[in-house]
Image 1 (cartoon, rainbow, N blue to C red):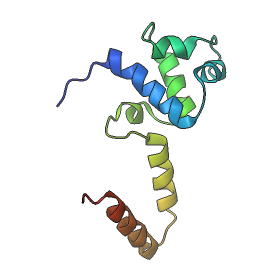
Image 2: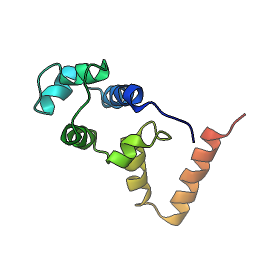
Image 3: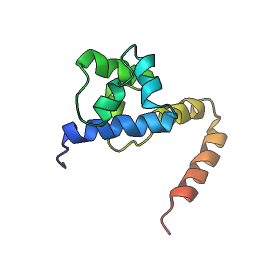
Length: 108
């Protein structure tokens, strides 16, 4: 297992998820009920969120703490949405979508 420096990784992960969501650091901070610079300070490694703050951040992104730390999933919220929609498909539709995904991800 590779070593991950979470003090360096956590700010980058928050920035990546925030950018994916298309929201500014200021707007996210205010949505969390914090000062305008709260997320900016985290993303610039000047502070870390408290445990409660971290849980609110996960809730803001619509992901679980486990999904936050899943380094193999760059877009956990989108993955969850995809799975929720896939559960509505018939077996035949699922097979079609699976084949499309395989075609897209096939290494050439």
